[in-house]
Length: 283
Image 1: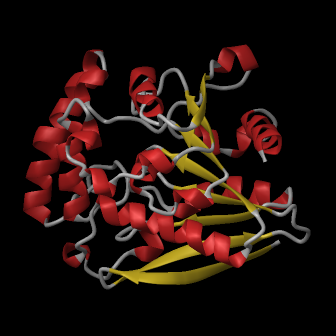
Image 2 (image 1 turned 120 degrees about the vertical axis):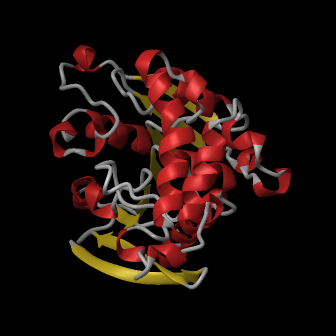
């Protein structure tokens, strides 16, 4: 296996970097992994390495303002979530250009699955797998989590972002710091029943172009993506061939997955084998 970091574009004066995992023997398939909000691409390295060992060419990347794609001064990063969707689209295009005959699976985590609604290159994805990708509308949550989301959108983000000039997620021990426009736009979505559909212009959306087989996964005890929020996202893929699965770990006799567990090596012989078979069946 070969692993190399590549700069593929400059957007809003900021570089976007992808890591390409190239197998010794290719199975003529590629996987693009689109991260959760503020999660470094290195978090997905074990997953990428595993699938590369099976013959897949795999791409991870950092959104503008995050990780390797981080500018020296995040306060000057002007990227918003539409730009992050363009980052995702650019990686898909790059993967297709690198291996034009490959079947491509786009694997998204959390916000990565939301961004495909704005991905103008989504036609390059032959299959899509969304992992805990959801609506962030606070009223779709329940109990104390609903209160936490309401406070997050309306107190924590606006106050902290004004003070620092970016969202200081590291100081709050949440995830990587976010550019201010990303934080503000994310907040505006989270306060609306129809989430990003409440703000998006029709010409910005690519939902009608999502027609491929799409596996939508959710898990119990996921405080960031409870089942109703994932259901909302699955239901807006009106032209896709959606395979909706809410997976109960106890049925599979595996540890609780939550929001971040899916990409951990402990699920190599269970969840990872399941999606490997799904990709094989669909491509």
